[in-house]
Length: 591
Image (tube, rainbow, N blue to C red; front, side, top):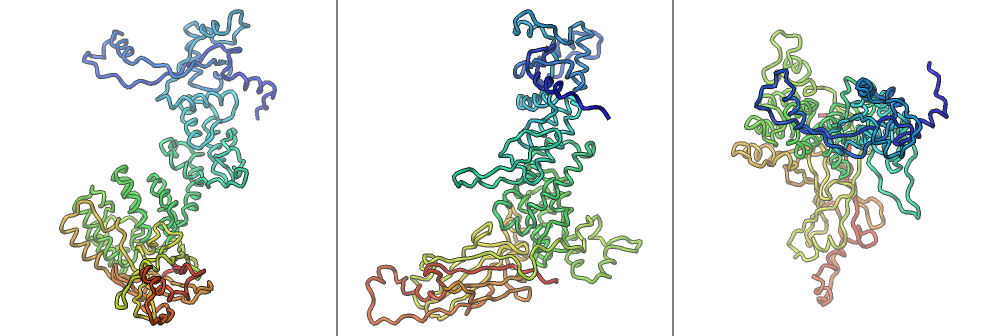
């Protein structure tokens, strides 16, 4: 094992970076020009005129200021610079330790031999300087994962020994719990700074920053090939676990605005990490299909066919709900067969395959094996040829809804909401109030089992009770298309817009004025509703009896009659101002 360098010597070398003292060469950064236009003259002759003309057409443009450098450092640190230094010596240019200068520093620096380092653009200059500085300090100086990977790329170009490994170690440190990009600390060769960013003084709370793993996946264009970099491949293995842990499950992604936006911003390799993971949970595979549909709506044009197929191969389609197997997949198949390059036809499934998927999901295990051709020389049935293994996987994803608690979303209706919906109704009229949901991506609905669910209170002033209903809808990303054919429109209308769906397992609760739950009713897969129609309880909420009045009140008429009507909701108005309740999604029962 090599002995550690003398600390005093190391300190002296570190302090030389960018300094003219003892410099015996200088680094000149130049921009790589675009390739020259094809020459009409033949270029295979031995004469040098053609090469000179091409060289002249590709004049190198300086980038930044020349950097004083020291060959006794860079010769050992960078194989690429070492080769150029050898070339300088072969041409007779001195590239050795400088003697004590007797002229001015500027005059002496002009005479230093130059080592040219080519950059792709001016944006690469800071990373290139950081890579060169590593030769002096052994430290990767960068404040973010993107910056570290930019330094790593330049280090690879310069063949800067140890720097690539130090960059991977720095990224690993940044991914570790407790690291904060707000600290903007330098990254040591063995890893990143670990000081966590504190909240600002004076009681001001800083906004929670997204996890570093999202930054890693936001700069995939800077990644080295994992097949050629074992350390980076190991880093990605850990990063995938962090990515899955951050998003958690499809239900969280589809009901949380922050996660939803982050999911749509993921590159394909990031989304693939979620889809292929057994730890990425869901309530139903239908929600996973919907999540992919939402991503495709935003990213289809930036992907190629192979990428889309690779993502779709991760779906466990046979695990989908009946409405997806009998409605959504056939509609997607019709779009795909009509125009496979249509952005709305992102799922590469045919009508025959969609039919087989539905059949395969319904038959017993023995028939499934026969359909798949297991133990038979004839192979799988026609509609299953070429299926990715995941499509017929019998292994459901991790169930994300904990039993028996489930996952809850609050809803509310303010006094103003109640007055708007019911205040001006005549006795025979019927009013409808859509409840506002908290903690959901859209305040008007939540997503479960790949469908959107909204909730309404209904009431007529002539009734002593009010109703509470749940309404299923097929998400627009699945049933709308920019330029649908008449055939696809007809199929969509029949299979999706008029579909009957089994309800998600859910419990609807309403609290009384004292905050105690006074209503808790459950819906489940034995309850059915047509898409767009409600299912629930017409007599869910007992209201106050109307107050009899002998004479009309001028004050009540001036307010539209709302005050007296809404007073009937007093048993449910907490603080006299708001009706409050919750929707709890429960683990689905097995089909």
